Image (cartoon, rainbow, N blue to C red; front, side, top):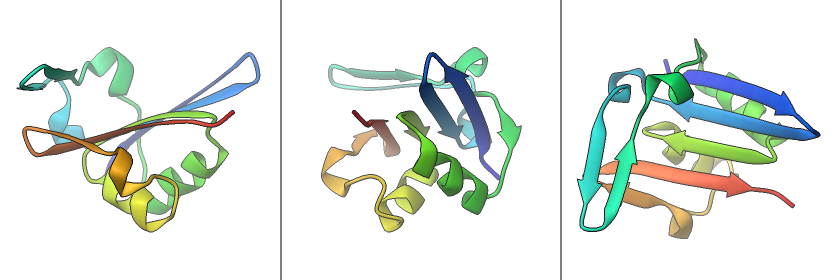
Length: 96
């Protein structure tokens, strides 16, 4: 089950979702770098449905791992906006 972290501040809803096995790892490919810091990405275990529900409310989101595919299927993230770094999917979302 992914880790889900929701931060509500100054009218924004930041949603962070990450596969637990990616915590603490660093990925790099060419000029792209991705560090999955526990201090940022560790949240509570949540099922995919809970993560998708949180993402529907997000004004800002940061996703790493398998949740990216689920967010694409749910129409939250567009496939064209996904980065793959050493075969790990990463997407960010900002709603204005």
